[in-house]
Image (cartoon, rainbow, N blue to C red; front, side, top):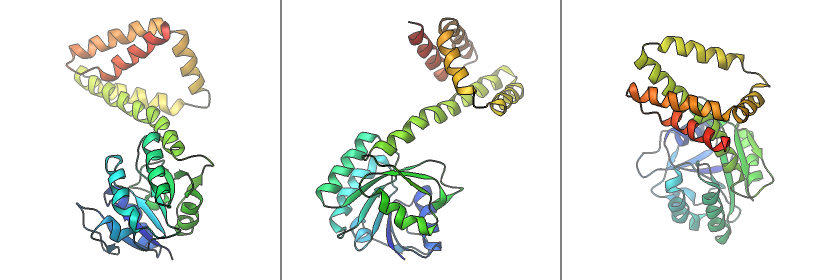
Length: 253
């Protein structure tokens, strides 16, 4: 069984690390703010966790990813792989790749493609970079689902962030609409309407949305301007309504 370092023991790191322990791996855990949970070998620093590990999973945050790599990369042995699982920009992933390569350590950009809490190690992952195949080789037998892309570091991160524009934008629009409907006294009606629309979606829905948005941009821009004004009257900040209005105006030009 491999020895794996997990840097960052928040919600994702703890869940993934716990599943690795359950699968029989030796897991060294380090987080400056959180003690290693039972089953993990506690480490006092990034370097202590990394020393002797075949695979390093950096699951702290995009903000801390560079500092964690600089603090631990010197302890990585020959053949070790540094996998960054943080949601970061493609540019930051390439920066991490360059730093790892300079230290003669293979790097993998790993994008976590679904919420971790319900799935843990079995959360679908997309990996690229020089160490991507090794991430799949080491984690696959332990229960992980890792899809490898033949692409440079940053590509997997970019795919995830493009997906986030849709999913997070959709979620934000739903939250704003329901908040406004609550203020207007018709939240249950709108919730049922949203559920019905999402349930009825099929393979034609995306093309219908794209085509309709371009074709009717002028009219819909005016509609969203009115919607934003209504939200202002309801004392609900029209963040998503205003963003939709601005996009439609851009398309109408």
